[in-house]
Length: 96
Image (cartoon, rainbow, N blue to C red; front, top):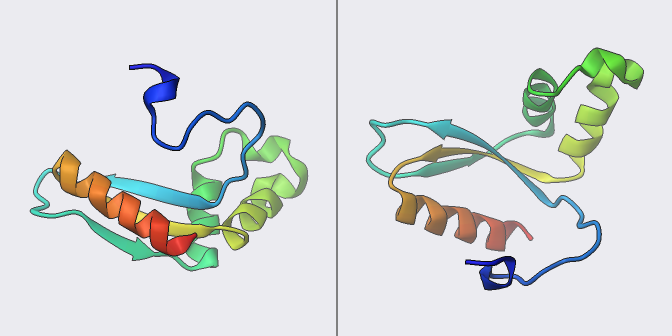
């Protein structure tokens, strides 16, 4: 498989971030699930998972808030690969 085989084509420049998924692996999940996050919850999750936020202006919180408020953010609990991918695709299609 090459990059040309990936659906959506090849982008040679910067691409805007439109959607953020926070993945939760649950080996007991019988089916995947998705839940939309508020901007506040998404910003808190982004901030908690950033690399060295204290090295940035506003201790990185301003950037986390900017990313979270300008995008659709979701929590995705995974299950088997095929249904998880289908749910991810459907959610992305609806949110764009």
